[in-house]
Image (tube, rainbow, N blue to C red; front, side, top):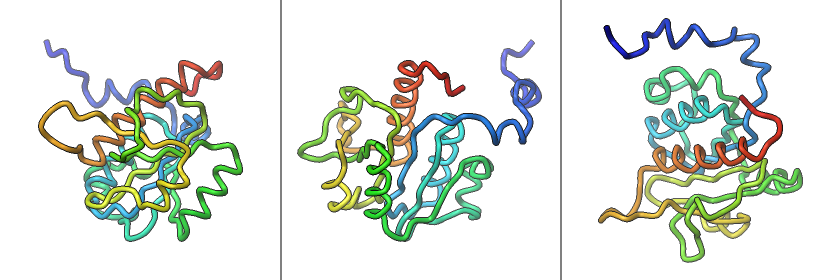
Length: 184
């Protein structure tokens, strides 16, 4: 007897597509600042679907769905996460701030703090930067807080998709615990 769940077992508890589309989402959005690797973007879409995040914004030269590399890494989950392509991220951030959304940049910076030491209040938008350059300086300057994942080993940084998974999972769990309206 196997202990692993089958695909049928996993799908048996899921609602219909119609019911899913009306489901309340966790009030976390993500801004991808010029991500260039489709597998990273697809992995972030997969994480956003798993956590039932509100939306992904894509900016710059970011690869956008539909795209084979995104779809392969996302396992098709990019179909379930609302997303938008943004021409001006500064305009978007000002609009989000005007709607009382906290802007968080994920970046190793002089003034960043460990992601687990910030009390996240919903809703939030987390900015994840380019695989090589990180989050743009102008976006860091207008962020409400800059957080990082502490690095205890010899490496200096994590892959952006891994970072997004760690930080977004932490925020979602904190928001759900604080919320009287369970998002799930």
